[in-house]
Amino acid sequence: MEARTQRVLIWSGPLMVLLFLISFLFLAGFIPPSSPSDSAADTYDLYAGSHTGIKVGMVLAMIGSALLTPWGVAISGQIKRIRGARALADTQMLSSALGALTFIIPITLWIGAAYRYDERSADVTQTLHDIGWLQFVCVVWVLFIQMVAIGWAILIDDREDPVLPRWVGYLSLWAAAGVFPAGLVPFFWDGPFAWNGAIGFYLPLVAFCCWMLSTSWAVFVAVKKQVADGTEPGVLRAGACACGCPEA
Image (cartoon, rainbow, N blue to C red):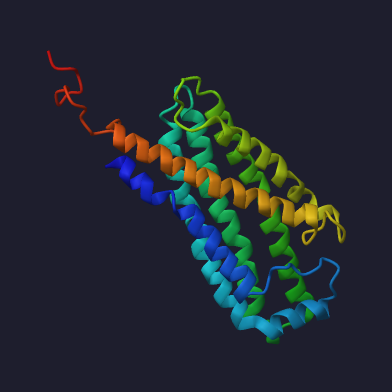
């Protein structure tokens, strides 16, 4: 029953990606991101022109952020099957839960910026907007730890038939390298390393989406195989008694 639950929870990740795409691209208009070099008046106009869309989109994105937690739980359920990887499973699960929180905080700042945009100065709105983007993109460090933990756990599984394929482990480490530049955005106002740049934003975004979708599929396949093999906790194999020992 546990594995069957994981098989449902793992789709929380792809659903999060879908909700973020709808909220940031179609509702809030945050993709492409605004430029860090925009004036306070430019930022004010952004919220004045789409304050309702921003609030609706960010609430949807907040729901998507919460889905990171069940997604991480499903991954941990499989990593714990790897000998010597329990600590890494706990590390990635806690990172996933912390990642949900660190996404929710900047989203709340953007909601706050849209909530009373017409009752405050443009400078205050710009400050909330800037802090939101800086924290949203710099959440990469929690994500980085999670990716490394997952990759490490998979690559120490030395069985002929590993729980998760080794390519997922290598992908996790490559994705960690791909999201790393997002942590440098506080030092740039424009160019490829800024929060709207090719390296500061789009490269980490592509790395994150490819990693999440690929990892979700790999875990789903692993759970499906676990159920089919009858190796999930609480499921008896043929020829075994209730205590799990073979019949005489």
